[in-house]
Image (tube, rainbow over all chains, first blue to last red; front, side, top):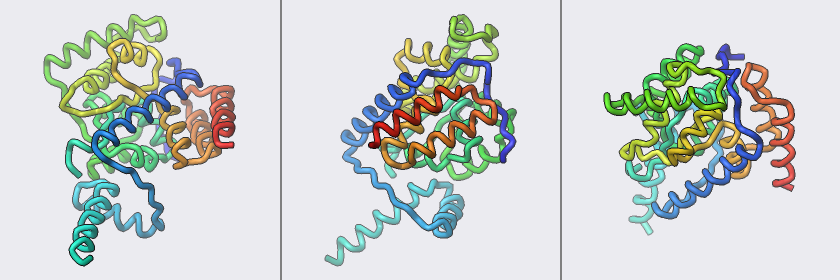
Length: 84
Length: 187
């Protein structure tokens, strides 16, 4: 297990109600963001070896994996869009 | 990805420590495209032993360090004093609240485009809310991820327990209630 010490363990954290309210308000904020920007978020599962390869490529390009995948999908859409 | 539709949040030290302690950076990466942190938060993360994790995420661009302007630093000093004065903190030394004050200041900067700040400590949350800075704590992030079916209620419970084992102040009652409410919500 990693040795990362806790931050301000003596400080009081939020209640359960506050945690659920955080989640509700955050989800609402990001829904508005998605609507305003015309976005639809997708969740994909990748086999770990493939994910690790993508992560290495993304790191070389100073990008995160989601941004790399979005670029590839955009290129695919252009390619297939031209074919059909 | 055009810059205007990148999902950006600012983070204080605590939520990132919990993410690193529980090895759950993927959850954060499914909800956000980039996390901005002020210099003082990076310093605290390194002090807590998270240097390797931070370096890796800086390399991929998922985490970015932002320096405050002298004017913003002044503003952060005021906020750290306000946090220290809060009855919700036992630590009355403003300097010990400077990192969260810098994070709140950064989240208020419009050009950053952050929709929320990741913030756990109650006193700092109270000050952020008074200044109308939208926020979410680590537990809230887990709940949201669970409600989006990215993780199960069992995983949320396991993550909170792992953070608790490593010293983060989640009570057993807190963990059980979060788990039960998520189970109820998913049934």
